[in-house]
Amino acid sequence: MTEPRIPVGFDFTDPAVLERRVPREEFAELRRTAPVWWNVQPRGSAGFDDDGYWVVTRYADVMAVSRDSDTYSTRENTAIARFQPGTTRADLEMQRVIMLNVDPPEHTKLRAIVSRGFTPRAINALRGSLAERAERIVRDAAVRGTGDFVADVACELPLQAIAELIGVPQHHRRKVFDWSNQLIGYDDPAYGVDPLTAAAELLAYAMEMANERQLNPSDDLVTKLVNAQIDGEHLTTDEFGFFVMLLAVAGNETTRNAITHGMLAFLEHPEQWELFKAERPRSAVEEIIRWATPVNVFQRTALVDTTLGGQAISAGQRVALFYGSANFDESVFEEPERFDITRSPNPHLGFGGSGAHFCLGANLARLEIELIFHSIADHMPDIRKVAEPRRLRSGWINGIREMPVRYR
Ligand code: HEM
Image (cartoon, rainbow, N blue to C red; front, side, top):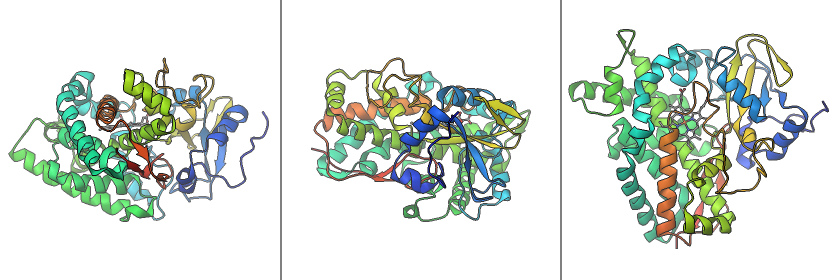
């Protein structure tokens, strides 16, 4: 293998990288020359006691790791490849009860508590109410004439949907919005408060909801969690609180960015927008998610010495799965750099590989994206960009913070 041409000091999880752009050329270079590549980081800088991590760029390798929970664990924290300075081992330990950071077989028991709320059937039952919400959101924005697409349109449906599902009163959804921005977008100074404060506030709010549901049970997810038992035991306070946190946060920034990147892609590919408006192909949703890949990277930690894509990996080393590269792997996707809403098949890894942690909310996210774009096509068919979007500063989310548009 030839040495890849990656600038010295380049770090694929540096927030400054994604703030500028997804490093597509660098990913392509690695897929060609060194598909599992060691990214050096100053020791301890990412909150881990190591001096780097493996960058995994090819589709097949990302899939292989996702499917192999025996070799690759999520215990050392999946979601965050780079921590705020000040994050401690104790913070990491505390987060080990989050389902995303638990390996099977314990993970299977945790996931079973909520998985029935997310089956295609359960999600389809929300179609009518979410369609009404989507329509209202888009009509309200349209009458304003111009505005920020992210705040007016893209944020709202994911937030309202998860509030409905969890049982957060709609008038409290603004709090959930702020917490989820701080917990996921913590690298961006615009979001202010540090993620640990946001986590503490959200946990306290979750406990208030639990107490309330014990007195007044309902058919929402919080009531399910209050009543849930694992091996005959109720969830501990921490388990409960982090469960609510994961559910409240996981579907917000992600789906919002799928919607915003999707809109931007349509604005930059007007022929695809015309096609969507005329034919509304079902395949559009999957292409929007592939194109957006809102979660650029999640990581695993190797439990044993192993080999990946011909590269030796040692036990304890971090392995970063770059979905933002896998979804543009030319060995799987024909002309991956073409935004094509009729693309089929489209086996993208936007929701992760098909392993134990495959996105729980995938069906919900798909429905939200479908409904919002149908409403946009109906009520703001001539939407235009009026200024360049402002990207999110993040080590792992491919995000857009603001996108000024003219609705009509
Ligand atoms: C897990 C992406 C929407 C809840 C994940 C994973 C990814 C992802 C990449 C990790 C997969 C893995 O590690 O193998 C996305 C994207 C979304 C989205 C791109 C929107 C387009 C949602 C929604 C919810 C949600 C709406 C609703 C609650 C979760 C949960 C997990 C998860 C709970 C952890 C599952 C587990 O550990 O078993 N998501 N997600 N996501 N997602 Fe999503």
